[in-house]
Image (cartoon, rainbow over all chains, first blue to last red):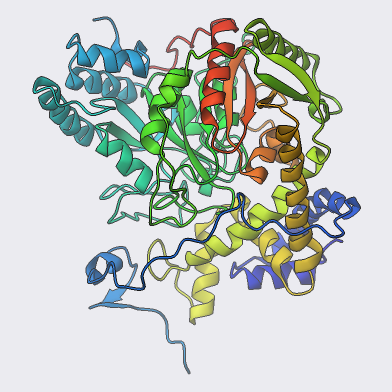
Length: 95
Length: 496
C-alpha cells in the first residue's frame, strides 16, 4: 500500500500537524518508504495468532477508588503558556 | 588522589567510604570536566549547584556513618526523565521551558540512594533516533574518533547519546537512559560502555516522557558491568504509580557480577547472521561465543524464525503508540504555543513548529496505521507478529537456553550526516539486533567486545529470560573479563 498526496494531507490533519504545500511530495516519499519497509509483514501467517497487547503477562493492578492526590491547581497550571486564575486559556472554541 | 573522574562508580563508592576522597571533590572534578567538554554537547542543562549541595550532604552522612548505596556518586540524567524544578525538554522544542513540579520515580530512587545529579543529558527528540542527530539541541559528539579520519565527528548512538557520550568521556560515573528499540544498548555499543535494558516492568516509567509505552524501559549506561548492576539496583522497584511496574523484590545485582557461568547454555540465533553482515561483526560474535565457552558455558545454535519481522513490526507499533502519547502536546497545558485563528489551527501550527521532522514523520505513520480502514491491516497484524516474535524467545528458553548472544549493532558508529538523510529506513536498521528484545519485553545488555579496525568500539548483546537480569550480569562480566581492555579516548575535545 502507498499513500498519495491527498492522503498525506489527510494524515497531517488527523495528526494536527500543519504542513506546507511544498512539503507534501517529500513527506509522501518518506511515508511510502516506511510503508514499503513494513509491507513485508503481509507475508507472515498470523491465522489464529492473538495480538500481543502487553509485553509480559500481567494482571492489571487495581486500587481502592479513593482520592489520593489533588489540591495542586497551581502546580498543574505552572507550565501553561496562557492561563487565567485556575484556567487554561485557549482560542474561542464555539462560534 | 589522581583524577577522580577516571574511577569506576564502584571504585568511587569505595574511595568515598574509606574517605580517600570527599563527595565534594568528586562532584567538583566532574563539574570541571563538564565545563571543559561543551564541544561534545552532552548536556542540555547543567545543575552544578544542585550536585554540590547533594555532595555536601553526602560528606556529612559519610562522616556520621550513615551512607546510602549511591552516596555522593555523580550521575547524569537523560533529559527524558522529569526533574523537579529543573527544565526538562525530551530533546524537543515543543516542551519549551517546561519545568516539572515532580520528580520521575527512577530519578527519585537515585536521589533517595544518595546520588548527586550533574544535569540533564541530550537525546534524540522524544527518544526517536539512533544517532542523537534529531535533538532540537544539536547533535552530541562521541569522544571516539576514527583512527584514519580523526576530523569526522562520530555519533554516540541514540537515542541515549548524551548518556553514552558523557559516560565514555568521563563526565559522569554513570547515566540514566531509556530503551524503546535499542536506545540504551546501541549507544553503549557505539561508545565502548555497558548498557542494560531491564525486563519490561522492572523500572517504573512514571515521570519519564512517554514514547511507546508497551516498549519503553529505563536502564543505566556505565563504564563497567559492576557499575550497571549497582545503578540498576537503585533504579528498579515497584511503583504504584505505574500499573505495569512489577511488584517483586529487587535482587542484589552486584552479587551476580563475578558469579560462575559454568554450565550455562547460551543460544546463538542463526537468523541474526543477516545478509551482508560484515566479516568484522561476524568475527566479534564468534569471539564472544568463544569467551563464554572458555568461561565454562555451553554454546548452542538456536532458531528465532521471526527475527526479520521485528523491525517492520516495531515501525508500526512504536509510531502508533507515539502518535497517541504525543497527542498531549497541544500548546494548552505546557510547552510552546503558536497562535491560530481557532483552536484547531493553534494545535496544527504549534505541533508543526514544535516537533522536528523525525517526530512529525513518526506521528503521521502512527496516525495512518491506527486510522479507520488500516487499523487491522497494519496495527493488529503487527501485534500478532509481535506475539510470534515473543513466542520464538519463549520456545528458545523452554528448550533449556539460559541466555542468547548476538552482536549489539550491525556496524561501528558512523559520522554525523552519514546515514538516513535520504531514506529514514537506513537509520532504522541500526536497531536490527536490539528491537526484538523490546518486542518480547526481555532484558538485554550491551557489553564492549573490543575495537574494530577503524578504531571504534564494538559491542556484544546478551538477552535473558524475563526478570533474570542476574544471569545477564554474570555473563556480561565474563565477557568483560575476557575481552580486550578498551582504553577510553584521551580528552582531545577539552577546552582550557
